[in-house]
Length: 255
Image (cartoon, rainbow, N blue to C red; front, side, top):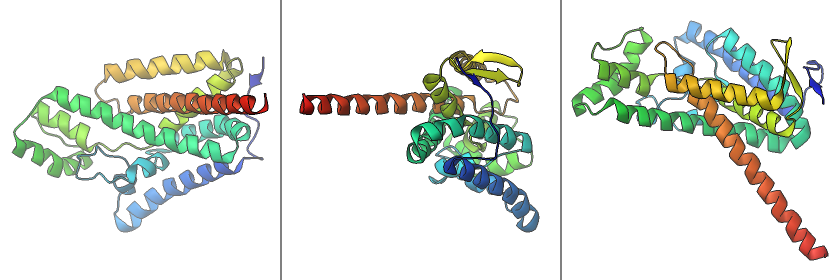
């Protein structure tokens, strides 16, 4: 059994290193552009629901490079370095980057699917009221305001709240690490040892329960985290299927 602890920042594989740099630059740029030009990059590059007036398809990629606070980016990038470095060295840079990007995109799509389901659960409102939510809602939220009408308030949050962060990709990395190195020990809070496979299960359950609870004031996209895990599992199983198929073909050829 291997103990898994961070080994240091001195030697980083290229994709992980560039991910850390890009995320860091965009985090600093968010504050600089806001202060200099009054432009909120999070609204432009963060992910919005597909029917929101703020949505653009490129956001499915750019949102994973944006972060809302120093603690948000610090812990995400720490985990990308911690798990991503091992996975990139194991898979190679090309496959690691493919996995990272696809799990991030998948997490965004999964989050929008859950938002769609919740919008249906809110119920229908007159078209003019919905249009008011779509057009005026982003401005209200930016001022910390919302409608007193419960339906309009709920729809405003589902349509217009911005999703940012690399957490979808991060949870995909966590799943991959747990599947590939299941008995390695991860030291939670640098003190509590836990096997990687149990670490993944515990965090998956926490995200599922938190997402279902949907507590008021909880601004964490729990289903995006689960989406990263789901897409990660699909990718890993797909690659395993392709590898086995190639091995069977080679076996038939050289038999």
